[in-house]
Length: 118
Image (cartoon, rainbow, N blue to C red):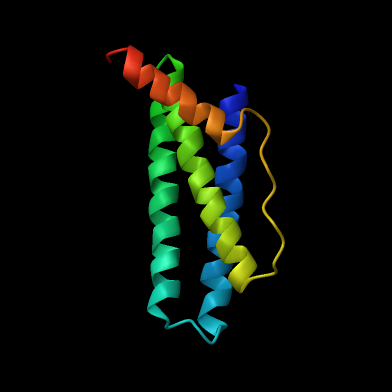
């Protein structure tokens, strides 16, 4: 497993754990019927599904582009999960994954799309 694949897996595992906790705890929360709370949980589900799809694609394709895309999608899911955890669960910050920072990966991905045609 590459550094990017490990970081992607770690971030997705964290976000999925938070989603499961939200599904269990949020119905008991006073804001359970708040449209913003419902939308935030839906947003997390969409981000997780997108990251998982990109993760599967990166496992079957050679080259770093899909791995970078999967890692950035997983980071986006982790960030939202972290916000939701702080707001509705215990307030513990999300762990940072090893590997390149998302900013560096965004630069590499942009560079790829500006200089190489798929």
